[in-house]
Image (cartoon, rainbow, N blue to C red; front, side):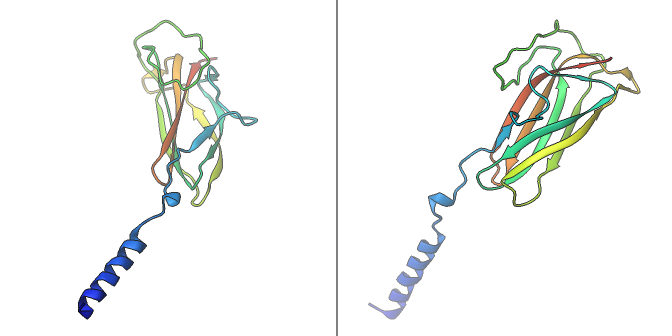
Length: 163
């Protein structure tokens, strides 16, 4: 065999062996949103009030590394479902929104963490320039994404009311 052929075969073997990634190194698990920790909030069927703040509290976990999370609060006046919970909440009759409240925000998780206790204050205004927000059934939707792009969601049914 020519030296160039031997060099080519050795180079090819080295490239193939080093380019193969072990299956153990591949993240195939979704992250976890834990709302069973002491002080977790909100829970399915909880009530929050316009013009007040509440403390969001959830534990996020991943087998490799967490990435980011988002919170989406939107009306459920038409009775649609995102619920990931077993508990059924008492629903109001369906209605058309007039001035519904909407909250959507994304949050980064500090780099390198496998576990993160997200605790933050969220203020719910009583209204906007169009008047008071519509009270009633809303969804509190949490989405968690890990560094590899796997995601997990929790869809909670809540009530937003005026005191």
